[in-house]
Amino acid sequence: MRFEVYCDEAHPDVLTSKKACARYLMIGSLWLPSELRAELKEEISTLRSRHQAWGEIKWGKISPNRREFYLALADLFFSRGENLRFRCIAVDHTQLDMALHDGDGELGFYKFYYQLLHHWILDFNEYSIFCDAKTNRDPKRIPALARCLSRANLSSAIDSIQSLPSSEVVLIQLCDLLLGAASSRINETLREGTAKAEFVDRLEQGLGRRLAPTHKTEEKFNIFKIRLQGGW
Image 1 (cartoon, rainbow, N blue to C red):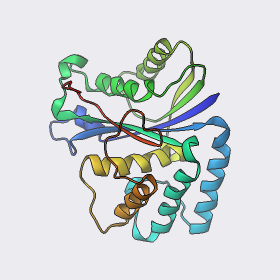
Image 2: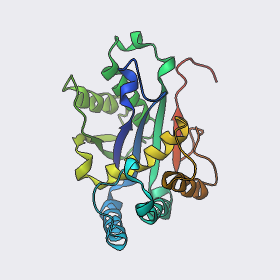
Image 3: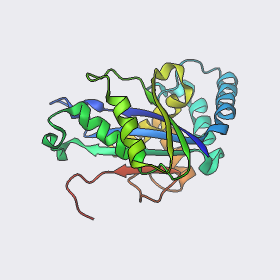
Image 4: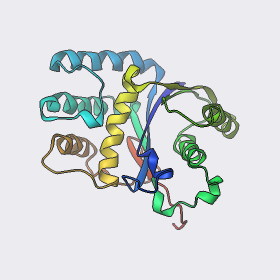
């Protein structure tokens, strides 16, 4: 079966800055069967028209006057059941030992990207992966990620990993939206009584639980809080 994965990140500066604006680096991924892509994009377009909501979909753009549009996007996420899944990884920068990444925050970032993706790649499937465009010091990061994933998943096919501007890819934008919600809980930045809080509430109602680290078997909205210091 063919799948597509759309990825985005939040707070990547925690790996490189001495004054990071958050505790956790977050990298997110939206997973769907390739055959669902056109239908999903059409439904998002319909919602845009219905709510007169144009421009890029982003967590940072949730506002009271776009409240109903963003709540409809949350409902859309649940309407496809497990054919539309989200997974993110949360990396606590206070536990990082950069010596394990040769003192290279960019290398560390892509190692965590690998951890995000590898564990949801299943045998005998084909995957196309789309990452939000990011300026890398080493232009070989994306090809190296593709090579590592391919070598670790010999019974599946990593057809491609492409870096694309999120402004041009609505499903990367949807990933950004879900990742922002997860990050707001993990990084404890959500302000109650706001339109963003309403969006998070709608997600939590659909899941029947709070957005928090999950067991690895959670398939709809998986939050992988990696334990860098070991333990159970």
